[in-house]
Structure formats: structure tokens, C-alpha cells
Image (tube, rainbow, N blue to C red; front, top):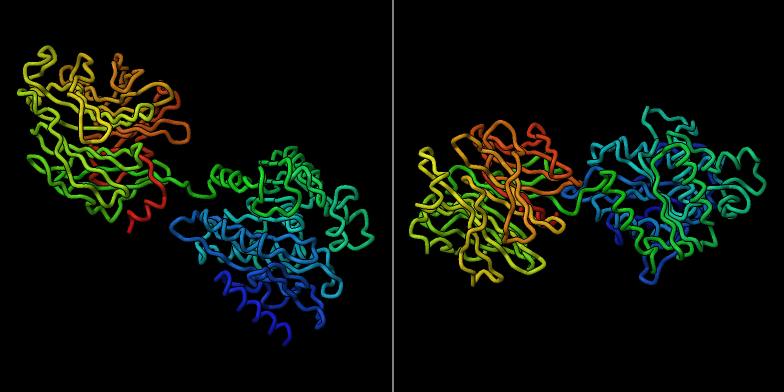
Length: 594
């Protein structure tokens, strides 16, 4: 009854602090346990009366901190706090870490593992490993219920908890208790923070060694639990953190483990900081305070967390009557509509009050700026801005071609921001009667476009409209991006006779040009229009409307020279037409979803 009262008291105190769920690890009985009524859990508290540490643990549990499903990527981490196998620094190296992992979209489970002692265990050397194995199996068994990917379950340990995590990573197949279910106890990855690795004198943490193995362990036990020696090709990929001036657990522990991983071709990353000593948790000061950011990058590289930004695609449907639509993607390949395809903004300016070809960029002022085609025959374009892509400023009609009596249209406007000058350039395609007769065709109503532009810094005053690009052919749908010290223009060759209808490139040293000769086509034997581009994982992806096929396509390149058609890899919602791709913070995506 004493244990039950203590356990209940801990739950009350703990739930008031963290609002998490504590789950018994062995509801049917702890294997190899010895009942001892005098061995009772005890707690220490911080100045705010929060549980700081626990000692005399004989009834193991996991405390679940489930990640918000809106940012979760299915990854889970079991956390093993340190404490020299005598107590658990359960707050600093447990609950606080779990909350931080939750902020990344990772579900966390703080393992309150048993303290090895002969008074409650038949074999204290395997007690913590039993708990770690069962914790992995418990989470894996409940992965579907808890929205976890069963192949993305890792172990994380601090100090002696790092020894337990590395023990699990190298001894996951050890038969240390009767497991009635064929569920693997192998962690998919491990994170070791100033870990105890070796049990050898001169490098080990003596308190951890004595508590786990006893005062006079055999050479066999020392070798068995010196985990660098136990590394093989099946050991989990590992992220290690240590401080050079750690006087409690020498940095050689991490060095030995890292070298063993490297020798066995196991993916590994090691961060050694100049100072920090021992027990700095999520970081205290100096360079060691940055290790969580390094770990976040490692998570990103291994696809264990979602990126802070997602890809958004602005587009129109039909003839553009109902306005602005959005789709989003995590990888730039698979796109989903937002709000089940509902319009986010209804057009109300221009002759026909359409919203075709919506182009959105984020400007130097932090606002999102949008331009669009308002009509088939008008002499201006639409403009609006927004802080959040939900609430938009009053729509403006900007009469950029009003001065040209022969202007027939202003189509597919785009906008590019030059951060070096603070200038926005708006540009579009227009046919002006009487100009460039040598490239005019009798087909397609005789449209014969060239690219024109105006610049602004405040969207109140604009420079005089000028010619932007005259490539010697009918050109439309330009989209310009700054890359390194160049500006890249993706454009559509609109030539009908002989038929082109493809996407090409041109370069300039300046946003407003002059732009050089157009390249050879980068798209295939199909009609392509409305190019929009973005870099993803070191490669350019150019999306375009296959408007004859009523579908969307894409090409990809790492060097802007060799292009691969990846149209079969991209999946857009049905009905998507000529839009723009850009990145937004994930938090903004959540607002758009609501």
C-alpha cells in the first residue's frame, strides 16, 4: 500500500506539472524482481515544487508526451535520464527534453527505469536493459494508436542514461526476459548526450559502473557493458554530444563509441564542445547551448521531423472567376488542396473581375504581395498584399499599359523582389498592335507578346512601363528568380509557326535586364506554359501547366543545364491552373487550414 500511495502522489504532482500520461511498463509484474517493502521511491523538488529527481526506482514506467498531430512526422523518442544508475534527473534530462522534442513534432516517452540494486533485483546488471527493451516494444506495439511510425522509434540517453541507450542499441537482441511478442527492441536511431559508454577503469564513470556491475565485476561483464566493443553493423545510427572538459564522464567515452560506429560503417555524427562540463542538459551557455539545433538538423537530414517551412502553390481554376486557391506540399511532389478547394479571395477589380495566374512572393517588408490577371482584354493588373495569406488588403487595379493605345492585354503578371536594392519589379506579357510584325502569326487571334515591366518600392508609386524582354519571338509567362549573383528568367516560347510552346531560360546580371538569348527548351514534346520554380534539396524544380493535357508537369535540374522530366512524380489536385510556388512557415499553413 505504501508504494501505491507514493505512485498515486507522484501522478498527482506530475500531472499538475506536465499534463502527461504515466504508463506502467510491466502491468503483469516486473521480471526478475524481489519484493522489498523498505525500498521506496523518493523525490527531490526544485524551487517551484516541481519534481526534479527520483531515486529508489523499482516500479518502471514511461511517461508519454504526444506530439501535436499537425506537426508530427510519426517519430518517437524514448528518453533515459541520467543519474549514475542511483537516481534519475527526471526533469532536466527527461520532461524538459520531452517538451522540446514535442515542439519539433516528435512524440516523447520519458523512461523511469529501475535503479540496479541487489535488494530488488535477482540480476541487477540486466534490470535497466529489460526496461529499455520493453519500452521500445511497448511504444512499437502501440504505434498505430499513438500515431507513430514503427520504423521511427529512437532512444535518447544522458550520462548513465546514455549508457543504457547505448546498451539497448548494442544489446537489443539479448534475451534478458521472456518476450511473448515478436516485436523488435532495436531502436531505429540513438542520441547519446555526454554518455557513459565504457566500464573500463580510467575512462568509465565509477559510480555508474559500481551501481550496475557491482564492486568487483568480472572482466567478462566489463567487456559486455563497454558498449563501444559491442558495436556492429546492426547498431543504431547515432548522434553524440560531449564536452571536452567533462570531468565526470570523460569525452573518450563518446570518442570510443564514434570510432566503433565509423569502423562498422554505421551512420554517426559527433559534436564535441570546448566547455560545458557534465550535465548541461539542453545546453547552458557557450557553444554547448547550440547542440539541440545541431540535433534538429540531424533529424531533418534523416527525415525524422518535418521542415519548419512547407511549399505552397497559389493557383486558379476554371476561368478565374472565383479567385485564389491554395495547395500545399511537404516534399514538392505531392500536393493537396487547402479548405477542400474553396477560394481564399474573390476578385473585384478589372474589366472582367477575374483572378487568373495569381503570383505571390514574400517581400522585404515581411508581407506577401500578389499580382494577377484581371481580364482577357484589360490594360492593367490586380494587386493585393497580406500578412497571413488569409486577410488581404483592398484590391488595386494598376493600369500598367494604359498609356499604350494599341495594347490588347496584360497577361500572366509576376513579381520579383531584389533584396539588394529593395525594389519590386512587376512584369507581364502584352501584345501591342503594330509592334514586332515579323513574329506575328495569323493563328491564335494574332497575339504577339513581349515582356514589359515597372518597378516600385511601396506599391504606391511606379516607374514608367518599359520593355523587359524581346527575344525575337512571341514570349509570355516569364518568372524571374535571383540565384547567387544572377537573375534567371524562366519563360514560355509562345511561337505557333513553327510550333514551340515550351519553356526556356535566360540570364541577366540585373533584375531589370538586359536578359540574354533564350536557351534550348527544357520541357518535352508537349505544350507547356506558366513556369514557376523553386529549389528543393539542392535541385531546381520547374512546374508548368500542360494545358493541352489538362495536367501539371515538372522538370528538375541540379545545374540548370541538364534537365530531367519528373512529371510522373508530381501529383497536383485536379483542375489546378497556372500558379506560383513559394515557401511559408508551417505555423502559417496551420492558419490556412483553419
